[in-house]
Length: 182
Image (cartoon, rainbow, N blue to C red; front, side, top):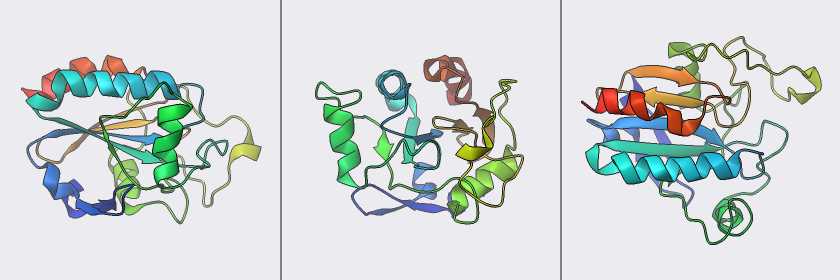
C-alpha cells in the first residue's frame, strides 16, 4: 500500500507516505535540465496555489535516468531551479525529494509499487523511449517510466488512481484533482 513507503526529502529527512493520509497526492519524476522543466514546475506551483488548502500534496522526485537531465544533487537542485530553469528566483511549492532512480534494479521501492499498480499511462500516449541508446538501466520492463515528468495521482485513501505520460500537460490534471478531492 502507498502508505507503507518512505522517501527522503532533499534536506535529508525521512518522510512516511502515511503522512499524506486523507490528501490527494501527485507524484512526478523531475529534472532541472529538461525542455519542459519551466512549464511543469510553474504548473505544479499553480496547482499547489489552487488546491493545497483543499487537500492536494505534490511530491517531486528528481531522477537522472533520462538524458542525464538531472546532474545536480541535494540543494544544487534547488539552486538550479531558482537560478537556471525556471530561474528568476523560482521556488517550488511542492515537496522536493532526494534524487532517485525510477527504473531498473535500483528503482526506488515507491516507484516499483506505482508502476506495478499503474503499468501504463492512462492518457493513451504513445510515449516510449524510441532510441535504445538512451536506456541506461536494467532490466527493461514494459511498465518503465519513459521520460522526465511522468505523473502518478494517488487518492485520499492511498489508492493509485491514474498515471499520466510526460506528454500530458501537468495543469490539465486539475479536473482529476478536483474530482478526487470531493
